[in-house]
Length: 116
Image (tube, rainbow, N blue to C red):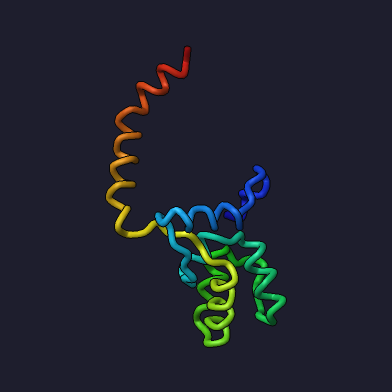
């Protein structure tokens, strides 16, 4: 969600609303960090925490090097807890798949209609 502010979305309010609907849940999963944070933000936070981060490292390389050490794992766990992510509740995944499948089936028709 790190790019949502630029389009005027209040992340905290939006996340709270989605959780209140009962379809999503907040999770603090360390493995979600590469998907939810920018390379520069992770590098900056890691350097502020005292880790030696190389400029040439990609986001994934930074994450991989941090998770190799006990102190890096602790840092990543604290980071995940400070930035929980929304995940779709498992009981609704089949419904979501049906929606996506339906979207694919009607995409061409919608595109044709939108041309007029």
